[in-house]
Length: 122
Image 1: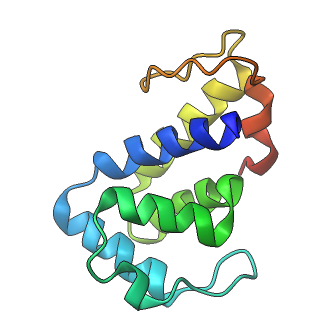
Image 2: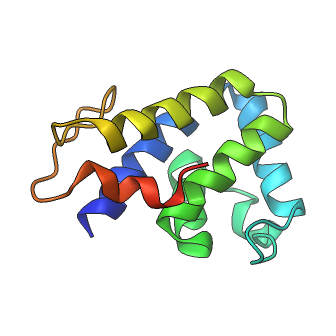
């Protein structure tokens, strides 16, 4: 459960950094493309969703680790390569960090190994 909290923080930070127009493009792509063999999130799930709701629905639909991969993939597809690279880098830092703190998010879950976030690495 702690790992899910760490991933949630990474995703929330990534979505919070999007401009509103980029966030709309992200949700549109998310509802029209199938990822990880699970299909696409139904458009009704995202219609009025804010960034927190979107993050929660991403994690519920795809699972925590796959949600990061999907987010990186969509960022790349909608030409937000810097945002994709930053999320990938933050996940790698969390995976390789000897401490349990996630860089730039400031969360220090106890008892979670940084390598637990690496299972879904792109």
